[in-house]
Image (cartoon, rainbow, N blue to C red):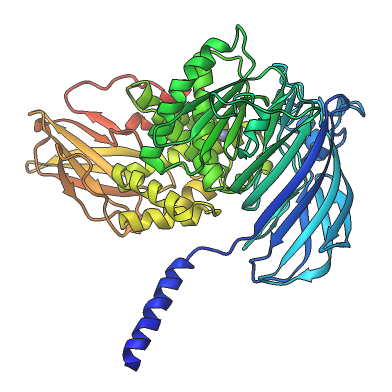
Length: 625
Ligand SMILES: [Zn+2]
């Protein structure tokens, strides 16, 4: 009996060990009630924030982000934008020229912890709060705040009157609790780049002039009072007199964004087995036709993403004209709307894909932009290629941008904080292009099917948490049975590059010996494909010793010979082909071109033709979106 009980306890312990394999995380519950004065562009409001300290640490302080404070002359964002070598053309010196009624700010009028005043200190975009009573592990605190904000003239993302005449793009508009996790506080001063925040629920009431239509994160709770396309189709709307209060609730999100404009039209489509997608834009010559066509595209896009990368978990998603380009928020995006169809579909694709990586997985965009932006771009490139039936490598531009950056000498490690790259260009290649290459090249390392299977498993394992690079690699290792730490280290934390070449081909007693040289410091497995004159092809597969395994067969049409692993220290490796060279038409390293080999000139030898002039594949332009 005791034995059985012990066995049961052991089984339960095992189960809970599995359930707790993920890290602890803090939690927030925001209740906000704000009023926007549309003539002064000022916002006053209250915020009740219940903060759950699920950490094992006692907290003496908490920190909030006050992002609007970045839009003031002399702010860190202003200085950075005026001093970086290649400033964002949307910002440059515009912050330095803002007048007092054009700047942004968030002023704290009062702040209480569990009903008692606390002291605080504002430093730029960060509010530091010294707690009245330390917050113990497992305990919670209620922070009651009254605040006033001025919505800045739009410089970057947030603000009033964007260049297409959208009245309010309200992103990072409220004092927002910073994230505290096993790495400590994430209180990055805002200089115009990425965000990271705490998981939780938002209950938000926004009151403003009744002529405005509001769109944003969450589900509208009072559609029959609001109307404007939110009401049940065919039902009457009972709108109260005076200002309208819009009540939104969003659960399991880490941010809340909204936009408001009197001229929005609101159109709705339903994705089969997916969310209700809402479109908000100002109808006109430059928008109506393309935004109408966008509906079908968005439906197909969600279907593709659901099928390949895991199911979108919320009931709605809103595509909102606003902001200054395209920016992702939970359950919505703000994009500029006066675009060609290709550009509109492209930006929408990218932002919808963010729902998986920034929205649901909430990868820390500051620390791991290559995962957030890169995985987003990877899925967007593949979905677009599928929907528009495009042939070829959908990530070709990513490779071209990466190679060009290396050539220009601007390449920096992808694994550094987004704010700290020396140039915007290096950041954008590291984040967008290298992240996409990381996954496409991973197909080369562990096989295509494993990558898709792993991406889905990663999504379902880590949704509503904040996974990190190692968490992703562990999932991929378990899916493929191949060790991958070396791949993460080299690709993300160094500027070492991949370069293999065929050094020599010699014949001896009816065998052909091919010597491959590792010219770059970044070691990789090698696919050496031999095409025989009889038309057959054979893969000589050389795993890297650090993999401690081999990828599965990818192409069942091709013969495959598995060779002994290549110890990464060895500069060369010789392959014996059991046929005479006169039977061979060509020998090539990675004909799939998934390997980010910086010099492909010597990757192929044609044994039937005289050598051809080399064409540089890296000069076809950079992906600098
Ligand atoms: Zn993005």
